Length: 94
Image (cartoon, rainbow, N blue to C red; front, side, top):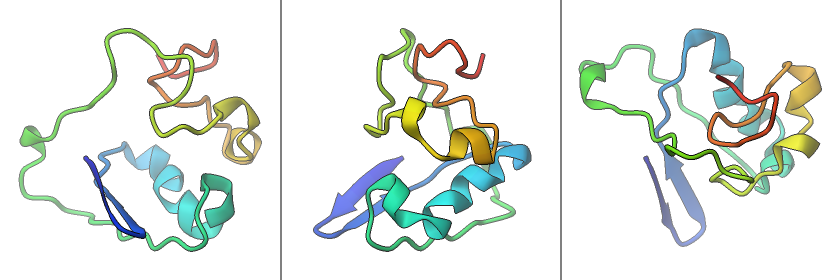
């Protein structure tokens, strides 16, 4: 889920625990994701995970839905990130 309000962006992501770094990355390096500042709040225990769905397109995209260029992202080396699962990059998640 994603929505914006003037100068704020709100998102809800459900990721496996081994990808928690991805959630924390904007607060560690806001400029890398195109922000001046970022505040991340992680909820450890949600009551109803069954209602949340992934939003990966059926056809892979040339660029990530957020507009980031995964090929140039510093997280690729720092966290061994393979890019957005929505992209058609050869290294993207299966």
